[in-house]
Image (cartoon, rainbow, N blue to C red; front, side):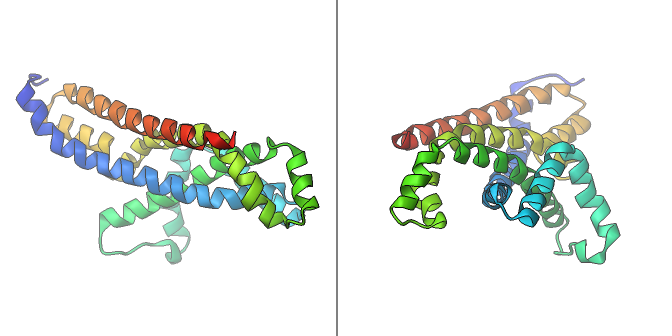
Length: 227
């Protein structure tokens, strides 16, 4: 095991920061896409139209009931074997891996965010729906103008937790050779024979987590007007 020196740490920083960009980028894109899809899943699960309700229910059950690691394995390794349609050839190995990871994390995040959104919407007093209908608002207008704005503050804390979970779970992409923080750390350890690299790597994770926790806390306070 190599010596743990300040000079050694400074030499590790560029690789760790490069990995951090991948981790943060994947997390932001996956959760953002997941939130968009989850809104339709949540509304679909609450729908009285059985085919839509059943599809959304099965989707949510599947992605919440199977390990994210297994989903990533399936999307990256199995899908291209099932059909050439799922084979990505962007010309960049990194881009291909990033897209596969984005798909896996986005689909998984959508299932969890769907339950968050559904719970937030159903927590709004039913009188709000009745009052909106009495005023002549359609279902879409009621959701857009009345229910969703009131749900925002209730959504932020659990969505923030989901974001942090995805941020940490992003370390799973190292299994498909994507160089995130975890993969960069393991590469450094392999080349320097110094396991002490895990210390700055964990500190970097803590810093990123603290920053995004602060951001979500500020957002919660900003939208507290709806509570």
